[in-house]
Length: 107
Image 1 (cartoon, helix red, strand yellow):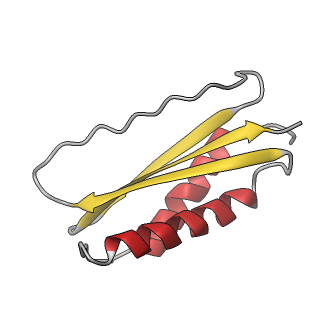
Image 2 (cartoon, rainbow, N blue to C red):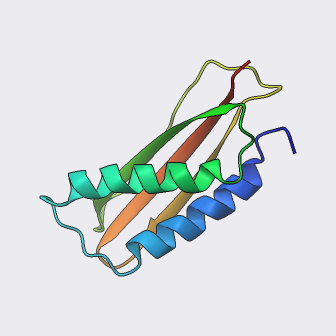
């Protein structure tokens, strides 16, 4: 109960991405506000299942679906005993999204 549960947060991210994006079509002009609202939504949903002593950092990559390949990587300096992360992906015919939430224990 007191640690960051990466599996539970991943489930929350997957459900939130699917409900928020569903059949959304990619728009270059609308992608920035979409990502901004998506980050706020994902962070609020993740806070519901993460213990209160954790600070969350949410990062979303959104792009147009095509014949391209994408690799998303991140690095962080943290305490492996308490800190962790969860990541989820979503795609439909028009767009793809990769969301990562880092949970950092705050004393």
